[in-house]
Length: 329
Image (cartoon, rainbow, N blue to C red; front, side, top):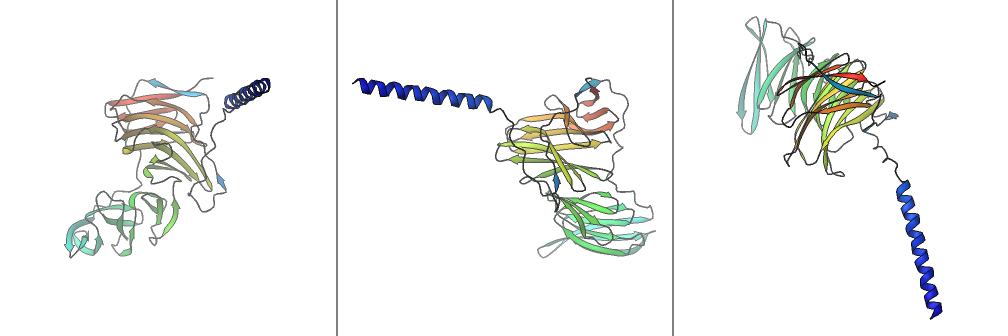
């Protein structure tokens, strides 16, 4: 009997010891989770750095009075077409095919025509010539043709992406990746892809050799919609988190402006649970370290953003807000 009681005491003591050790380990394990893996931005991923939720530089955003500000400074890189050039488009259906026919005129004289697959048609001009394109509404795929300024056809191609902007001899098309298409031959010279599942690329800003772009996607591990900003410079890739929302994304708008010192993002997120988040975040231009964020009232959605030195202006559906990036010491 005494032997049995002694074994019970030893067992109880052992269990108390195990519990104490476990509690000590839990209390000490306050390390942050590891960074996410490398992305698919470039074939050579030798210098990829992740800085999700990293706060930096001991600065904050201070609301200030808004002065007159012009939000028309940002450009897609497209230029105004010469007044002597006119472009007309007409949709028609041939069997099961949806087609758009473009006719191009120089000083009122018909010079060229081309037919592209799609339902809607549009055009823009770049330094190299006139670009016409057709697409299906709601889809980011398009057929594109480039004419020189004599209205001679240079090339015609199909892409699973949509033309968004022009930069240094490239037409930039966007779908789940960013494609740089040479205006000389229509070939893709560069491709940038985020390292997340089913991304929605919202906005792109190119500053010198640096590409900034924003992405919204549903994280199946966290069960949340995440908004991220990426930096791509040569072989270097960085990213940082802007904001999150609980459900699946129904609305995503992540507007960017940048200068040599800062990057500012005005965000709008909405999910199927009727949650909504609107606000602005500022990051360092070199490392995407998050400096500070300001959240707006529910329903005050951003329309445009402008960064002038250390002042961020955000045009919203309820007016214009201005914040100074202020050092705390």
